[in-house]
Length: 189
Image (cartoon, rainbow, N blue to C red; front, side, top):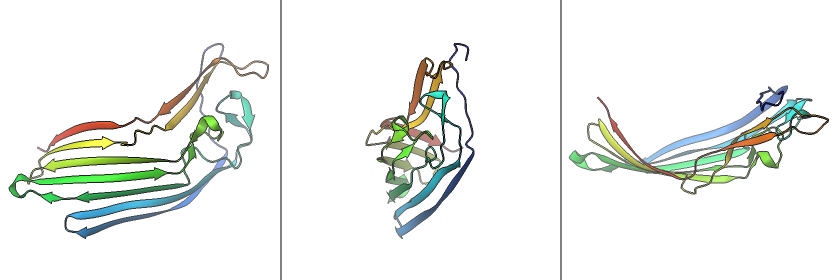
């Protein structure tokens, strides 16, 4: 505004979200368990005649009725498996592997190509050792093994528009982190 990039937020007129989630956990041996969930979500704008075009700025509005809500994939799925290795007086070793799938989604109500995330898989692995007393633990992990980065946020930093043309400025897109390897230590007093 007045030659200075600015950011603004606007609430939708009305929206609807409905869906279902199926969740489960099965301890099929004393040392093995598998769990996960499956979700379905139908989330869309039901009334918003003057929505702002996130790509071109506040000077450009459109009727967003029927557009998918941001960060609302229609389907998601997660499954995780863990096994406990009893090490006797030495403690316990707990490896866990999990994978998650998300359907395509949009990060902005425009539902345009700049907002689009294609469907993706994300898998994680954890290897945790803990003492018998469970007061000390160490955990190695690998998050996002596939090293897939997807968009989480989209902001348009524009100067004021003139004569129907978008103003100057830039677009800012936030992404998730790629593959992360790490080590955690814990001690309970």
